[in-house]
Length: 191
Image (cartoon, rainbow, N blue to C red; front, side):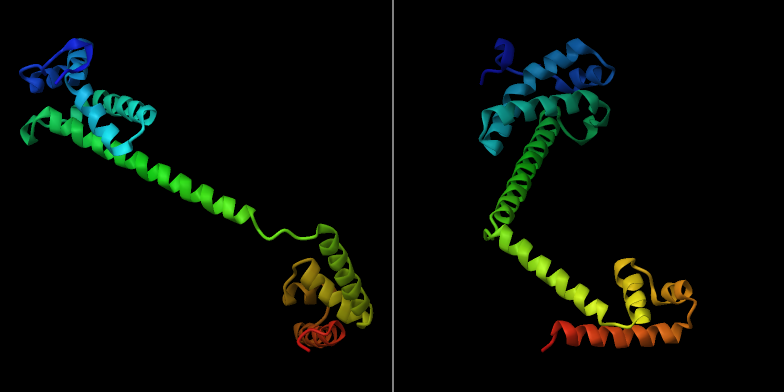
């Protein structure tokens, strides 16, 4: 097996090298990199099946090894399996992110392909509906119309409408009920 920089085999004791990496030794990290970069790239490449992404993930793994060297516990195992576990997790995370992004893009594309509609007809229909609502609102009594406008167009609660109109809450509720019945009948809703 050939590793980067022409090295053919890993240093005899990677635990010692890793201990020096933990202390921030750049030369030790270069030795560690030479020892594990080939196997890391091979594993990541098998998971991702994409050269460019594999290179990115490998660099992320090596950066994580450098930054997280203090997390390595020599009592729990050898260096290469520890690094390979990090590499496998990073590669699987990348696959999941890519799938999630692809699913999100597919859903967005599917949503963008709604049935085409005639925008002019849609606007004309909306205009006619607005005219009909205005016509029906004009048929209400002044107090009913004011109550409906405050509640539905300004978003006030019944209590706030009562305060605004200086009327008892029960009276406002009755006006609103009667107004909504008249609007329903005028608009032909539920017929």
